[in-house]
Length: 409
Image 1 (tube, rainbow, N blue to C red):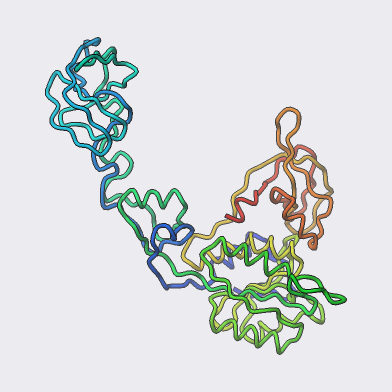
Image 2 (image 1 turned 45 degrees about the vertical axis):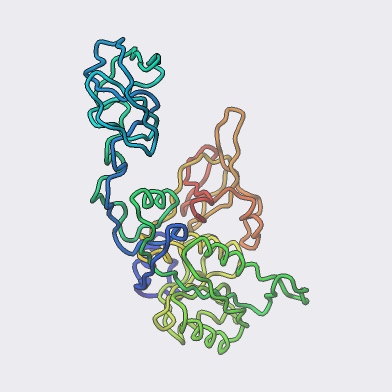
């Protein structure tokens, strides 16, 4: 993998494939209890050690019967017992029924449930009004999961529903990849910490807070490296210090071509730059490389550029470092509610809102201000509308829309 300083812009898909295939993988693991395992990356395959459910049980309130006893319905049967969830009944004799409730284990001999809506209860007996087939309204043992089934492969990111699946098989803990250590380093003399008065020429350091919050949705530990001044030696030393304790370094600002942009040169001095400048709008100056053996991402300083490139490119790469499959965020096609002239050489990610017309049909409209410095548009938009290079957009054209929920969860 080679950097292309001063060369052609790298297409987004190409850059993602190169970066995701190149980032180093961490190997450390730890054991997490289920209530703290959401969002973590499994370090090994997980198989079920039991059937779920572990016994045949009723899917409905009604009467457990032998299906052969009620084929000539209506049939009156004596009720020999009452079984609630958590109880075990005895053997069901031929020609009898057992009152049963949802989730309760079927008594031995029963093979079907006559639901209570199709029964008429009497004193010590029940009239089954309709015949039932063997297995009707019965959840057999192993209906959801069988012992030995592969539940999840190593690299799977555990979601809340997965936690429930693990718990249903009796597991209380999971072996997961350790959390990734990410050093977050905004650069620039103009940056001030929120809560402090601004001096002339300063702006508040919003990038750190936006990106740290984004990373906190992942199994990541964010290390605050402070703000690096616009100075080559200072930047180089901060990068080296960060590399000593982090798996990945993410900077914002300083990767363009200005006289005060020192990050790129500092990375080349302390490590190597492997990729620089993408065919993406916003976010062209993105850089990727290594400081020592530590992965490095240099994001643009403009807040929109930094946030979008982190969502689209860096976030999947961090999951890859933890052993998960890196994949482009999923989107779906929506019609444009606007027109725009032919785009240039870069793939554009427009901040858009979804509108619903009088007929209930969705369409997207971009915000008028698509400046990479207008960070508030990230909050006001529904997601990103992807315009490929050299593309003219007309009303009704269906292009890929990526909701924020796909990029942030």
